[in-house]
Length: 526
Image (cartoon, rainbow, N blue to C red; front, side):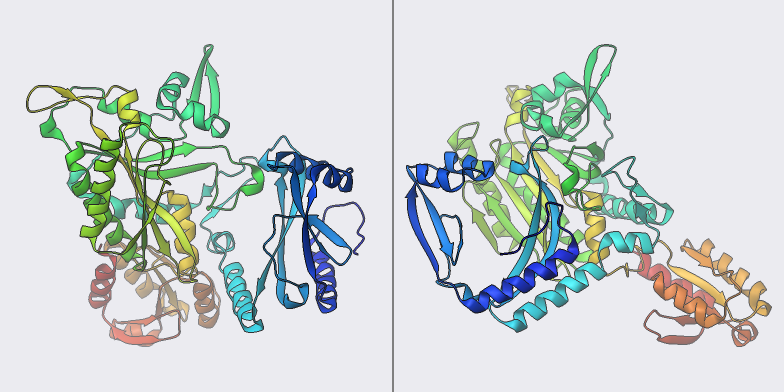
């Protein structure tokens, strides 16, 4: 047994625990289980309130107890026959948690670890883990001066000048792809609580919402964009001729998350979602979904995410609307997926209560999957908000809403691509695309001329004005992951040319400013 003082575990404790685990594995204890009456189990755990609570919640009159050596624990079963087969493992970290994920409950600690069948698989995973830690977006964000966090506003990122350039370029690129087929709107951050009761968010998400009171009236800080878009739709009557009507919004939202689950840009309390709400008829669902999938794939491919995975989630046990309408909508999503041509899986019963949906997953350079895009069919809110359009026979009908997000959270997508590219953002996205550096002060006048020419061409460029030697200037640019370095010595001044140096050390000599600009502008194109 390991006896540690009553205190919080620390990272250095992991090595002690892991060493003891290896000792126990060599003893090769058999794992033996049996079903025992609940009263017997309660007696075994009479001093453990957590186990007693679990026992009370297990159905039936017995519970499973599994033993290895002198250690035993509650378990439903499904084990190896002995612990000697568990050899290739590693404890990977300690994190905080709450009992039953209730922030009002007891604070606990969780020790996590991994186990593999072979030492080669474990070594490969640990190398992967090392890469994940090395290229953690929080680490890169600080190193590249992109964003930061402050304890006075937990879970709410501060974007620095360079980070905001990247953030805005992400928005600009999606705007470019959407083109004139979408109308972009902006809705308020603070709206009367009654709106969120009508939308259903109050009943389902109130524990994740922020509230404020103004003149004795309760308001909510926007946790989702949908209700604001719906109020915009209701501003005027609509004809079937207007549908599909695509309303896009880069909506800034706030949702409360437990402090223990906050994780850089990946899990925040304030973020922007690239929502698009498409108001359409049931007959238009298939074509609009197909268009949305095409747009998503084009966007993801720009970042090198070509291996995407698609899943169709169908009607759950509890749902609203008729089975007939659900079947029509689900078939429309399925037909759009089939027309798209990419393989997809069906997740039976995993749709939302208000409609079926498509989930889009991307895979990054380290082999991790991220669920970013969604296309959701919604019958609930159009009905709840009494939305209407006038059909060709002058009858009033209820539209369907398609909720479409591609980045999902811009903050989260920012974090994903930062790790995916290991900080080396592509030229078009890099906050500083070019750094100009000189070998001696004698080249300063020409460097200033080059700098101005590049800026006039719309490129993001800066000078290294330090008095460091050129080798130190180059090293600094490499650490800051600047895509292009312009090196100017006396030879370049005399010939009115540039030397382009890449981060990997490759150099190109004798480039004219005009040719250099043309290449850069080509890389900047969407």
